[in-house]
Every structure is written in C-alpha cells, then in structure tokens.
Image 1 (cartoon, rainbow, N blue to C red):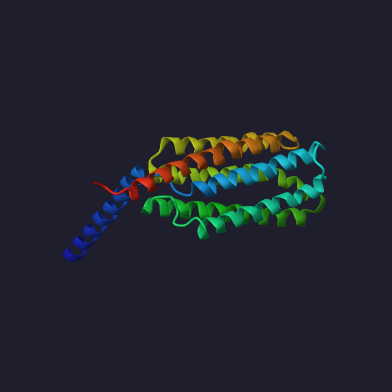
Image 2 (cartoon, rainbow, N blue to C red):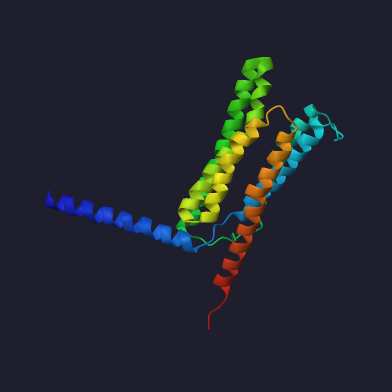
Length: 220
C-alpha cells in the first residue's frame, strides 16, 4: 500500500514537472505556424471581399457565382499548407512541446471549422428555402473557433498579446452576428481576418524566423 502511494506521489510530481517545463518552454519559444495563419487570413479575407463585391454588384460575377470563391479559396489555402510542408521545410518555428501542442490545437480548429461548415450546409439543405439564412452565421462561427485557437496558444505560451487576440476573436463573433443581412458583414469579416489572423501570422512568422536564425548561428 505504501509502495503504491509512493509511486502515485512520484508520478504526480513527474506530471507537475512536465507541465511546469512545458509552460516555461512555451514562454521562451516563439509560436510557430505563422505562415499558415497569415495565409488563412489573406486568402479568406480576399474571398470575403469578393463576396461583398458580388453582393453590392461591383464585381464581374453574380452572388450565386461568388459562392464558388470560398471553394477556390479553400483549395488555394490547402495548396499553400502542402507547399509549406514540402518546399519550406524545416519549419521556421522552434520545435518545442508547446509548439507541437499549439500546432495540434490549430489543426483541431481547422478540422472543427470544416466540420461546422459541413454540418451547417447539411442543415441548410434539409431546411430548404429557409436554410440559406444559416450561412450568415458562418463568419461568427469561424471567429469563435479562432478565439479557441488563440486562447490555447495564449495559455501555452503565457502571452498577453495572444490572449488579446483570443478576446478580440470572441468579441468579433457577436459583432458580425449583428451585421446579418447586411453586405457590411463581409467587409467586417475581411477586416477581422486581416487584424486577427493575417497580421499576427506575419509577426509570428518574423519572430520564428529570427529565433530559427539565432539557433543556427554558431556560438564563439
């Protein structure tokens, strides 16, 4: 009985030491994956601007035709992800447990977004004529997922700046919801993607590049 208690105590101490090391490691290393976050902000931001242009009839295509833009944007984004893995390896981010956890979190965010979109599309199809109204909820839903991603990263890296991105994403979700049935929704969504994804992704990419270069610099 005493041996079991000692083993549990040692196991608990080891777990705490691992979590403490993970937190300390995360606070020192920059968050990787900035290229992908920047690409998501730019590609889908441009798609949102195109949707707005179609709604206000300043684009050379109709609103119905503009729906294909999102599929094209997704194809471009996935191609950039593949290129990032194949052509731009090794990744610029510092390889730490915190970065691996953050990468897993953002992968789950992406999978959750695609699952949410597929679910809403299925519900919309089943509802018939009333179904398309659900699509106005998509920008808010995506902002909620981004908030979750930034929140996990903020906790892992103990970063106030990442926490503000988390809060900004959660605030943006209901704000976009209030813009339902207005073309301004897609302008606001494009701005949110720029401020909360593209710009932070660029800054994180720069920080990761600098850290990667510093690690490769030989010491005297």
